[in-house]
Length: 195
Image 1: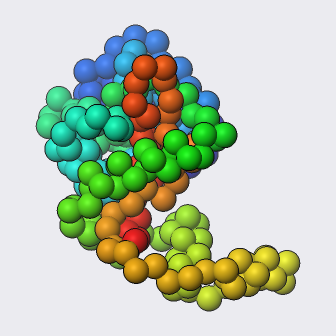
Image 2: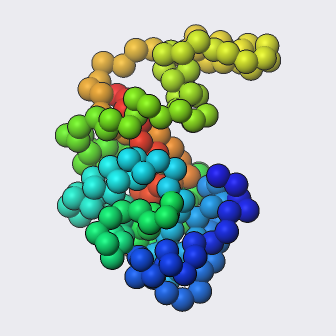
C-alpha cells in the first residue's frame, strides 16, 4: 500500500456511518485515516479482515488490556470497497515501555488462545509473512550476502519453544497504546500463528 493512497471516499464513509473531516494518521504504512472516533484502513486481504473483526468483536472487555473494536458496515459486513473501520482507542505508542508491551501482549494472547487457526494464513504472501517464516526457520535465508550473514548470525541464537501454537500479534511494539488511567490498548493485529 502506498502512503499516497487517497482517503476513503464519501460512499465508504457513509457505508460505515462515518461523517465529518477525514485526516491521515501518522505511523504504520501511512495509509490509515480517522474520521471522528473511527479509524479507517485499506483492507489487504478480505478474509483476514473479516476473521480479525469476527474475533475482536466477540472478545469480552478485559481488565488488563483494551483493543480496538471493528465497526460493521451498515450492510452488516466488515469491509466496503477495500476499506475496514475500527473504533479509535485513546493512547499513544511508547517504544520505551517494552515490559509493559509484553504484559499487554500476554493478556491479549491469553484472550485469543482458544481461537482456531485462520485459513487465510496458508495462502498469505507478503514481505512480512516471508520474513516471519525465515525467522522461524521455515524458509531458508535468502538474499544478498550482507543480509545472509546478518540473518545467519541471528539464526544461531534461535531456540525451539515448547509452547502451544495459537494466533498471535506479530507486531506489538508500535501497536500498543498507553493512556493515563487506562489499561494498554492493542491495535492493528498483525495475525500470525506461533507459540
